[in-house]
Length: 298
Image 1 (cartoon, rainbow, N blue to C red):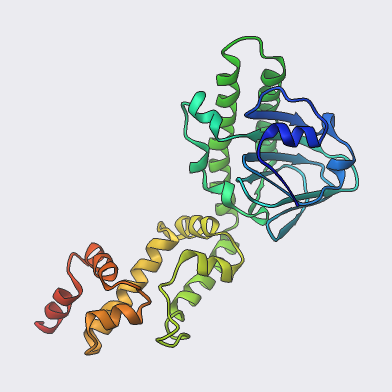
Image 2 (cartoon, helix red, strand yellow):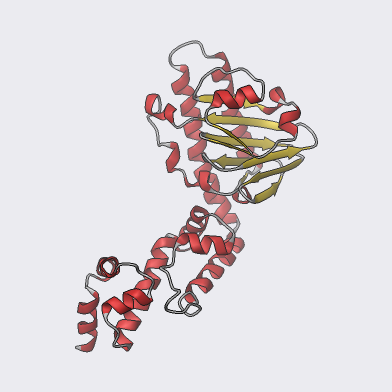
């Protein structure tokens, strides 16, 4: 596997010129070669936005493989492993953005706040025809400005186009979540089933505090994708739902057992009882001991 610390090293590898050290915009139809058609796994220290049309092959990010289709947006964060293979050249755009550029130019929402960069490729954004045309137009304008820039305003304009694209992607993902309600419902149902059985399936000496990462791994999705799906379904993030579940289980044990607060904390997988008590009080406005006394006084 090859890893590229900066955009220049990646462009040198593909034998294409470097116009800016922190950003690059390419049209696939202008840059095809054997290395692009059949590529070994690579990773980067920068962000990548891929807009792919008429793709005949597969793209892989991490351990997830996704067959190509028309009008797809992929977002890749630094360190993700990426592979792309195709039997014929495809169309679209590739944008490479190093995070350092935002401190110098960007006055908009920072790129690392967009959750979809952490999604795996099977969670890619599948565009409608209208969305595809809009994305294609934005990328074409960014490409034109990047390759024909003539003054000091160009980079701010380019980054404004990219900012608009990222904001639109959030809207398009909301549409995709809505259109995939059945899939979202199935994912939510599996999550809640795993959550309900979490403490039942573990011995006390094996239990750990449940995490979003644990359930995401079980469901073969990324943590942010799971959380965004649940937020779209219920209005709550995965972590908030997990914390509510822990508190309900804690209330049950405080009410029906004689275990100490420290023992209950241990049964729930908390390494430190103080953290359990802080979470409980934040959620209920009472400490675990105060809650136990209030229930017994009823």
